[in-house]
Length: 298
Image (tube, rainbow, N blue to C red; front, side, top):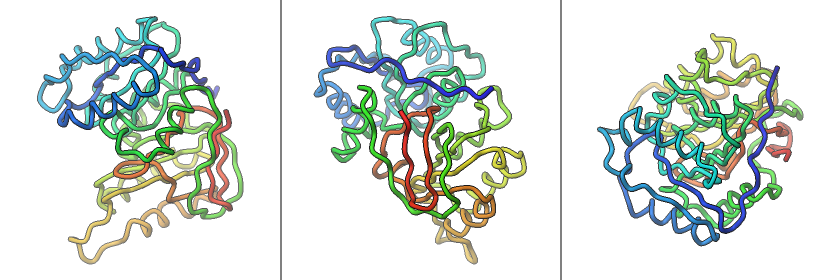
């Protein structure tokens, strides 16, 4: 049976939030501390374990160190939310020997490589947030910062607007994530059921042929034919001027998605290297392919 994920209890000023690095090691401290300050300015206590700054190669510690840190934060009843420091790579490695601990649901916030954890958490019935990590939060415009803070406080969200490709209106369970990470979750135990899903995807620095290859995998696996609608965010630096002849990104997306006969909306304001509007993962949503809107149904 398809599980619609539930949001954790709303946060209140004074709540304790903890920082986790489930993926890559921290490379730039200044934007990280600026992101911490954004949460502190909202009245939250932010707990930072600077031991995670040391890292292990390109990872923020060994797999076991990162698993232990995440499990500890999930089981600590004094912590009401987990703020991911950055993406990078490494979250899928944690899932190899991972079981979500029996603990009250709490907020898990991040995007990019954090997709792996967000989708796995949603499969357990808990809605995390696809939204800015600490190293990107301070660069967000005020309206997307406020959208994130409103979401974790249990307030309603305005719809996001993009370019409608037609297909009518559909309601389903919203799965938001990075295309590359999500593709590597297919056919694993950590991929949530895809029936009745509105699939919201973004990516960065992937050439058109690689986007083509991933979407072809979604088609060949049958996964793309299970979903009810597609919401496309920003695909930044995904054009390739070095290869001739070539396809433009929009041509690849149209070719691989345009024949599905379902509502599709592109150019929505979420993803890398630009506005990244927060979206809960696993909750009910409505996609209007004619008007070009994505509405979370909280």
